[in-house]
Amino acid sequence: MHDHQILSDPKLLVRNELEGMGLDLDKIQMPTRVYIAMSGIVNDFIQKEAVVDSGIPIAGKLFRFKNNPNVGLVKSNVGSPGIAVQAEDLIACGVKELIHLGYAGGLSAELYPGQLFLTTGAFNETGIAALYGFKDERVYPDLHLVDELNNSLKVNAIDYKKGYHWTTDAGYLETWGKVKRYLSQGAFCVEMEGVGLFAVANYRQVRSAAMYVISDVLTENGWNLGWSGDEVDKGVSVLTEAILQFNVSMSEK
Image (cartoon, rainbow, N blue to C red; front, side, top):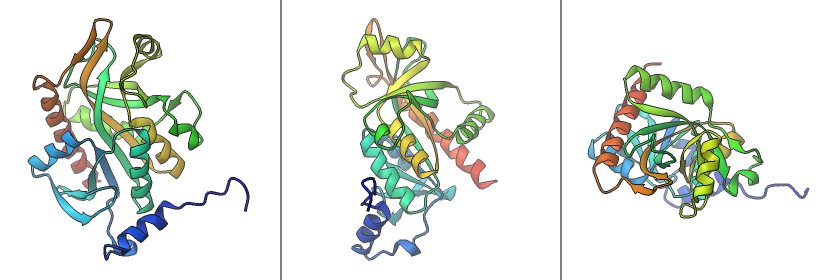
């Protein structure tokens, strides 16, 4: 055995966990696409009665969408290492597309709480990307999947922003110097999960993408929290409706 031989296997662990619950991995019908969404976004889908419990405990509780049972939903862990583990488990079960639905902080007054953002790539300020062999300044989603989301948003006349963003492991250490640097390089917002998902998806050769609701804004005037009003909740509702439309377009292919 050589020094770089990987000793662990996510599929082996998932199979073992499922067997302990009386489930057989080989007989489970997994969705092709799964959204890994933050808690408030998952709750909005539930309140809209858009999903049902699949009974499959993969990466947490796995839901299926009523308007397309070939699409699933799980609650996201926080941070790139956390979402990376979920991605590994889902991919080990046969999922081919992973889309993160989360919250991000805007980096300029041009963005506002409740606005939707579709990322085309993430500036990497995490530890996990290099462990998966990605040492460049940016880590990318699957740009074909990003184009599909982009086209769906346009067809449904949904207001959104598109571009690069910044992923950090330290959400409470976002300095003004870093904000200026990433802004100057073309980033519009910052969050904590994108790079972790993209790194695993690229390593395992599956498709990935991410969309965010702007929840707060960081500027030279300070930190504008959007949670006190209803703008973020409205943005979440727009996002979930956009995703439901995207699911329909997938089922029509």
